[in-house]
Image (cartoon, rainbow, N blue to C red; front, top):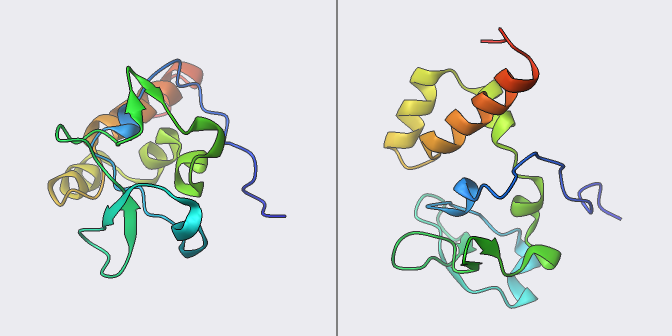
Length: 121
């Protein structure tokens, strides 16, 4: 059994920033699970979840995930707080410019950390 079988508990409260303009790469063993995919723009040969014309994940409908109960690994372990801790603003901004992260996700993660741990940053 994978150590990632459970979803990470993130206090999202309906936030879907990580589902907008994301680059959710699928693990090779997930290729055959029937997800709508498209080629990953940065990782040659990799697949990612497909997107709607506006950039949202193909499975994001009316602000909710249509595959929440069987989402890919990257969706289950996504945590904006991890991004906020890992990167300072300048690095996050550069990654955003390269389309590797969405700066709004970094900002939301930082806000959640600051809420629980004031004066962290």
